[in-house]
Image (cartoon, rainbow, N blue to C red; front, side):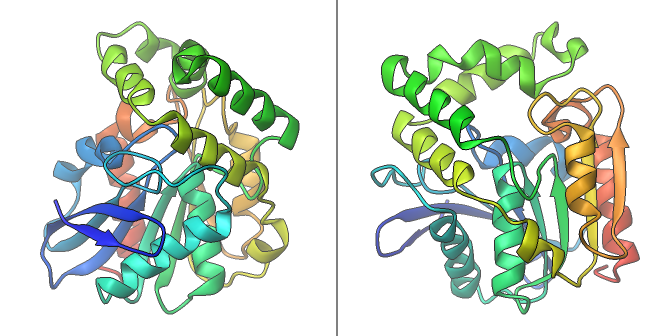
Length: 262
């Protein structure tokens, strides 16, 4: 897969579908790589230009020293889309990916024509909470948090399934420094004011059993933007694209059609 060298990081990214199609950009959550989206791709319409990438400190992207700032994560996405000559994309961001999407839409409305805010918020958690997690990873690696993270990520049904092990392995395989860096970026971000100024189509998605960004938190953020829509996925947690890929892809497809993207 291709890579993009930038000033202080090299981003690993992937393009699928039609290189001349309508662009859809996916930004994944803390502790995951671009394969978070694999299961939904077969259920999306043909003819899209699908762009995924590993944010700094994750997957096969390089790992600058922590801490990171949200402005750097937004700039990474901006520079990737500049490199790929992408304009008027639908940006799908999950968790920290949704924060990146909000920041990018505020900064570069020419790059983002519509926004999907999945299992995210304008502000996620508190600085104290994130500092506790950073300290835990510094002391014992991501493994120290892994079981608690699985409880926040997934529904009761999925926690009992055979698929859980591969997602736990994805989490603990991420670099500790990258997890710490992105945790610091989330801790320092409050987008309530800039997001409330956005005027573009927005769809929110929440999971009824999400222990990281509960539905009311997602809804509160989505409703900052006039005319937005909100969808609650039942019996799903923080990563509904993993638990219910066909339903998730159906929501995305409907949004792409409603906004005239396809």
